[in-house]
Image (cartoon, rainbow, N blue to C red; front, side, top):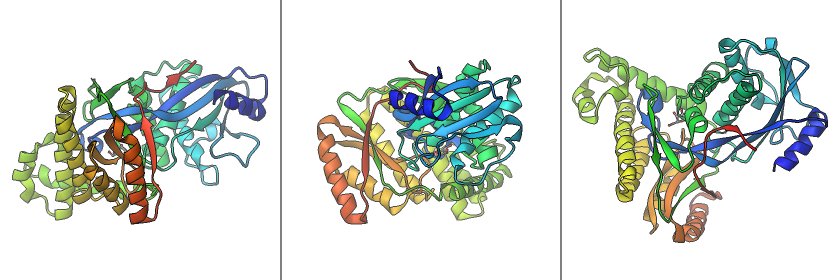
Length: 392
Ligand code: GLA
């Protein structure tokens, strides 16, 4: 792929370039969904699919960007002076808002923006599938700037500035999970991250002959912005109600039993269900990480399934297509566990499947899904990879 990218780079930015290659993975969250914004734990890993970039400094003092995925109709890059990066831009090349948001965040944290930068991107992550293409392009851009302009930003800061870009510039109130996972990923490990303290540890993902299979429902998760922000508000209301009788800083400060005792304080039953999800999912994520490290895949898989049920019944972020994919997987022999992954409202499920059964899994789930929904599913088998950075 890099060869084609160099060729495109030459055409778009001028042929005598010595651009350097970078890569950012996407992520799949194994468990711990919608806990990051409530101060809970998540358990994601960086995946083989992601976004590549070629980048170098320019002497124009401008930022120039081109995407091989979205800019096919253009033969020149999008370009902008740093001073003009002030707010989200409307228009057909809206993808640029992710890198622009990062540059805007970097400008408030780092000084010397002495050079312009040219970046060409190409990604193989399915778009709108909830595998964090936005976090990938954000963290990739942060790491490119850090390397080329010598900011020396570490992986955690790259994640935090990228989250800031998404929250303040793009306008999605995401938590830290996606940016952290794609920035700090480690080959063959999942990251157990406490999102309230940012303490983290790496857990080896030893699945033996089992495989991680991502199934894309091909329902684009378009509602994710507004519905996501609404779920956060509902959790905030539940937290405010509980705080009248107990001093906590986030919902995930509570255990399931403590929340149960305090449930009478939450005025709206819908808000209570949202809180029940966050608190129970936080416990599931921690137990699941322990089970995986102890080699207890049976418990790990059951917790994945339970996570889906809670996302469906308490948090209400699944759609019928995701429920169908999960139930089909639960009934299929050789599946250890299966759940929706990411923000929800479309996107993907993640399943742990016996290596020998993978082809049958794809055939069976694919045809039943199509029969029941009229849609075609896509399947991605993935390994676990390192976080974003320069590649050779
Ligand atoms: C999206 C957000 C993350 C996280 C997940 C749900 O991917 O970007 O911060 O909240 O949804 O777990």
